[in-house]
Length: 153
Image (cartoon, rainbow, N blue to C red; front, side):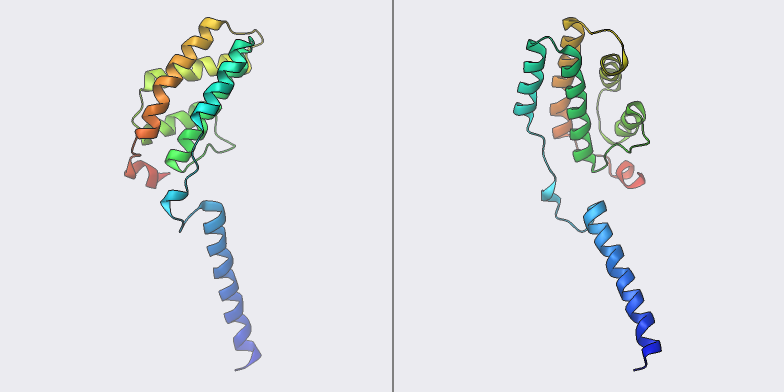
């Protein structure tokens, strides 16, 4: 074989290998479905409660939301994009997972107040957020994502 024939074939083969490695490591394709990471809920709930017990209600709500986002990302295999707001992520999520939209919207509203407001939230706000969170997270774990919606994203 001539060198002129080998070089293009080697370049194409190398490009195919790079694309396959990208798909495997970055996008997670070709992996066994059992490798999904899970969220250690008892540990997360203990951390949230510890923050609240020390009066850090805002931080506890933010951690609850981030845990929610992590769980949804794991379940749908589609994490929040860096260009996506929390509300956009939730709107996309509600198309995939059968969750109570009104409760999720209320949870996001409380999260936004905790995350972006200048004043500290009360224990009542914390309790409202945690009540919604503890109602939602078992539904995420038991939910089956909509196939049409997951293939569209």
